[in-house]
Length: 290
Image 1 (spheres, one colour):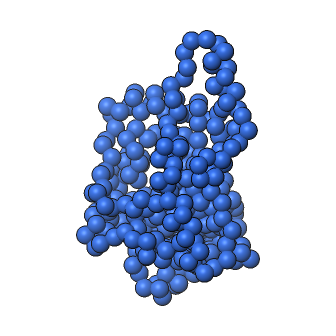
Image 2: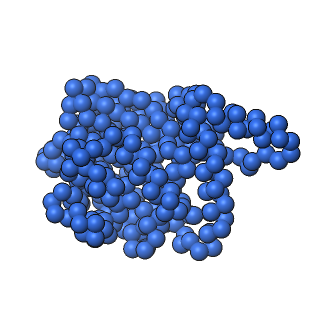
Image 3: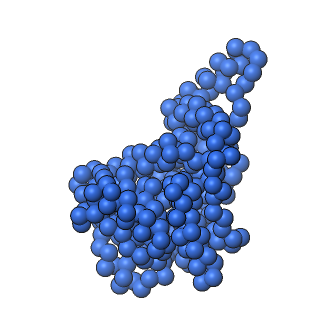
């Protein structure tokens, strides 16, 4: 990403951070509810398996929509971001939650552009999170560097989650749930039966369990209704200029993993049911070899 686009991304996130609505402050889609924001945190906690002994590094923490639940659960939490205003908002939220006693902290840092020594100084962590961040890299070189540094920040046996990755393969694979069928009872039963079917992989092997598929069906319709109901009262989300994000694919991201030169295992996961930005996106869980 050139310096102008990089600065604009930072400025948009800093400007959005001043909004009292956390969904807007964290640059989520219009109509995102506080319930959905909580679902994001629960989904991440579950996938990263964060416990009271975990140390966590979050790259691109913003105002702490996910960071605050992580900080409450973990032994130690560090959030980094390029948006200084957003970090200021997060610091205040940590203070209100009484987590500003050294257990949780934030730091202004460009994870890709910073010198290697500055990133290495952060140390290693049991868990690393980059949620809806990786697509902000400007080139494949930057993307490979981002992934390599994130994995290097893991302790042996640690887990990293690259969450809500927009994959080109999923553009038509993960669509918003269709309207509930009308007409015969048989048709309605068929839809529910399909939703309760066994988990199956989509085009890029992201497995969605039967429970998740049913939840998508139920929460997806609820989300559509809530968006329509509250749309008039919501602040318009911040907008980013064309070229601020990079189109990702499974092949590209896996090539970046291979270039990291650190032995890992990984698997693609479906985003949690009804989490914002879920459609057309996937999560990548990476486990560093012991």
